Image (cartoon, rainbow, N blue to C red; front, side, top):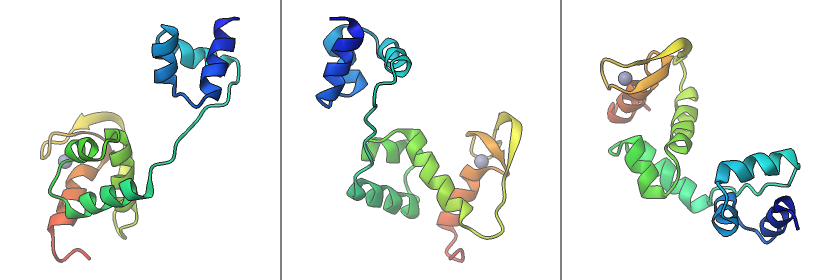
Length: 132
Ligand SMILES: [Zn+2]
């Protein structure tokens, strides 16, 4: 049985790539490329509704940093960032542009691709009681 067959069997059992990597003694990136090349169906789990609610509440609350929220909810920082940005985009009159090179915001020191700084705007909108 080839590695691809092993991988297919393990994934069919519902394992993640990380679990498959541990089982088969290969790196996750190796298996990822193999799975892509062989067009294997990949499992993508949706976030639990409870986790999403908790994330949104913590974002609304605004006391924790994105990193702290990610740790608290057991999701990646980029997931938190996506939700935070989605919330920002819903606000009228806020239209940050993507800049050519990411730069450090002099105010919050985040590395940002969108200017004006979305991290600062998020923090201000959450601490300003006049905003919504
Ligand atoms: Zn900033």
